Amino acid sequence: MPVFAVDKPLGLTSHDVVSRARRALGTRRVGHTGTLDPLATGVLVLCANDSTKLVQFMERDSKDYLAWISLGAGTPTLDAEGPISERAETPLPDEARVREVLSSFLGPQLQVPPQYSAIQVGGVRAYAAARAGGELELAARPVEIQALELLGRYASVQETPRTFAPGPAGWTPDPAGRPFTLPPALGDFPTLLVRARVGSGTYLRSLARDVGAALGVPAHLAGLVRTRAGRHDLTDTVPLEALADASGLPDLAVLDFPHLEADERLARELRQGKRPPHPARGRHVVTLEGALVAVVDGDGERLRVVRAWA
Image 1 (cartoon, rainbow, N blue to C red):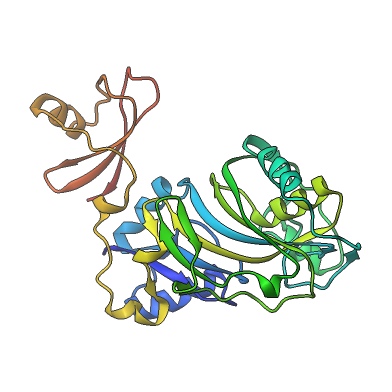
Image 2: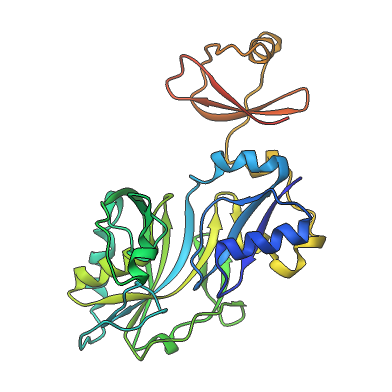
């Protein structure tokens, strides 16, 4: 079965989307390649039946977001779910200062996940402990923030753009563009509109918290739209309610790997389960008589092969 990129609606968990997809597609075997919080919208990639074997290759894809960061109010969830747990009078920060702070977050780094997350410590989910009034000791995790661009500063989230259009640099405010839905605002707080590109495992809620801390104020994520996941742009998504009639994407089209041409010798050795040397480096996919094989090579001396679909 092909792969589907859906536009996740506001208010649904990723598990909610998977449950609806199972009904729409008539199968229990549905997985996704990267969680979106209930208050986030945008690209959620679903793999069904045999395509679920591709999740292992897609969940590490980089992702693009539009993030609304409201300053002057912190929440336990780090987003607009609330309630507000910390306040501070906050004037609209200087643009140069904001750009300086955003640039300081670029590159590989350690990030502390939100307490309201699915991370487990000792078999206990962080969100379960938080809802019970407790707090787990969450270790900082390695993440990578590849790009952060300030698109605007606004006196309140109500004044921020809500319609966007895709362009060469990513999705940009456009009065004639596509409307985005944000969760109800928690108040009239100064808000930064940021375009981000991040590696897998990065929490934009944590980034909002940390940007506020760098500016010396509490902050929360007032809205989030995922505009790209791997090869899948928001323009390519289907509405969740139209999933049953969607044609989807073939497996080879969704893997963001170059293709490796297998000559007769290489094809024979791969079929025999051998790990032959090859000058190519990085991740590749090959097709052997209709079977999709992902070839993962770390050092150029030996191919490591995983059959993803047959």
